[in-house]
Amino acid sequence: MRDTDLFQLALGLASPWFVERTAFDADKRQLDIHLDFERGARFACVGCGRADCAVHDTREHSWRHLDFFQHSAILHARVPRTLCADCGVRSVAVPWARPGSGFTLLFEGLVLALVKDMPVLSLARLVGETDTRIWRIVHHYVEQAVARMDLSQVRQIAADETSAKRGHDYVSLFVDLAKRRVIHVAEGKKAEAVDAFARKLAAHGGDAEAITDASIDMGANFIAGVERNFPNADITFDKFHVVKLVNDAVDEVRRAESRENAVLKGTRYLWLKNVENLTPAQQRQLAALEGTNLDTLQAYQMRMNLQDVFKAPSLASARRFLDRWATWVRLSELKPMVRAAATIMEKADGILRAITSKISNGVMEAINGNVQAAKRKAKGYRSKRNLKAIIYLIAGDLPLTLPT
Image (tube, rainbow, N blue to C red; front, side, top):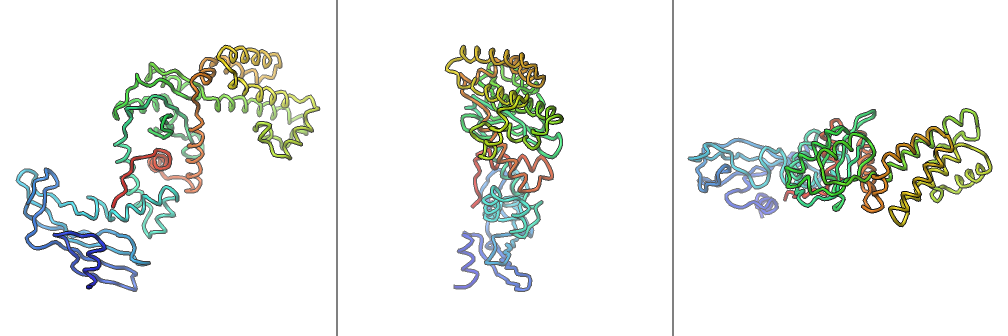
């Protein structure tokens, strides 16, 4: 078998395309495969689909293919342009690459298979390309898949922000709680981010009035955005954010008290965990502090006690529990805790709705962790467009059609 016949079979080429010749350069570590089409061949117009169009002229193109062993492989071909009575002169779509790409479909398929699990820069070094060219592949297929999203069945949503860069730079994530996947990524964390999601929902077959539940934090921006765009959605304030609010208050009490009480030095992370999640060393440390009259210890007990509200058997009992808890906090006169309790009582209806709606931002916390892990592995992203693409890839369950 001639080498041209071998590569003809390996590339899966069908008439009128064939391998004309090959050239191997050991010094450049490169295999060049030259393709051509049969004389007199006619092609379909890519514009209207009209069959049997004559070739007007040709243009030379090259595409990076999968490596041949440890050597880069490049396909070369003169691509015909057809003359169509309706569309004029149009380039033919070759079967091994998409229009406008400098890579074959199989090379792009390899990139898409690897990019979920490794940073783009590392992948670019692995395949011997620039990260800019790899990002072009990623953006093409991700944005194509996002454009095909069907959001007609979305009923329950969750929203939260995640940091894009150090400092106050965020993107907002919107999740379909039923399918546990990211369906929209918006820049910023203002009410306008919710507006953008509502427009995306409508553009992809969704109905704003069909949204029944929204799990969000207690920030005014998300509340305003949801109330403006989703009139039939009951808001559930996510319990993770409720606990975080109280955690922050406990830490504020600790910082103030530690200025006068050295026993609190180095205990910051002790108060952030539930008792059952403490390490043996932390459990001994907490036991040693239980005989003291620390404000921080009292604040921690309030924080632990609050979590029991979500275990209440009914909405009425949960309301009674929360009222008693808020009274206890007010009588303590621990100012950070009193402020947190005031916020919680103001948002009590949305907080207690978690008992009946059974929804939370738990899936958001997992997604957030995966996004931040990918960001750390990549040492950050140069643009929010890149960050959005990675979020959709790792958390969007996109209907990607891998090239073949």
